[in-house]
Length: 179
Image 1 (cartoon, rainbow, N blue to C red):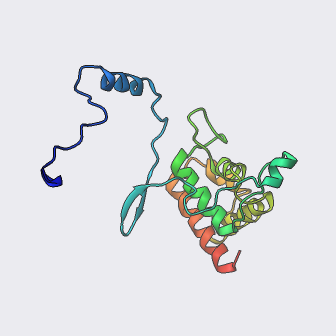
Image 2 (tube, one colour):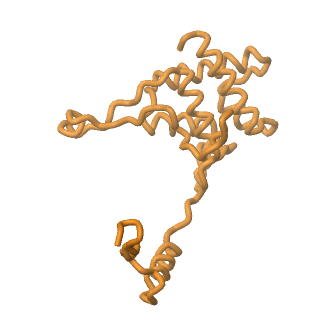
Image 3 (cartoon, rainbow, N blue to C red):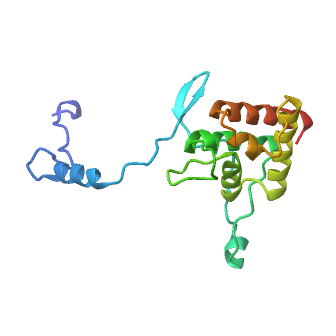
């Protein structure tokens, strides 16, 4: 017989043989914990797909020297504008909160999001201080004089959209300043 008329190869695993493998896999998958919060969609002009909050930024990685010296990885280099963008993304991914830095559900306030971005290895404390200064500049320039960004975050009239808009304006300002 020719090769084209030969019978196809037998499947490597026959799941309808009654062995119960498929049921066993389904039972195992049912025992796995459900993610606490699904990732938010990343929307672009070409469509949308789920992306992590730090998409597009390099992951901080330990070098061989870091491992030998038993020290943490050096922080990933981000600009002030990048830090503010990551802060907004972190708030979107984990939820926004007023009156506390974080809660048991993982939601964070503005300061908590900046601390989390820093703790994940993006930027330095100096970057965070400069980013907070940009936020204060925007608050004062738009007629919202407050003692700190945290006071603005915790005002009863402040919404999550207000915080994201504030971070976007501060990131734009930092980008125009080249920082």
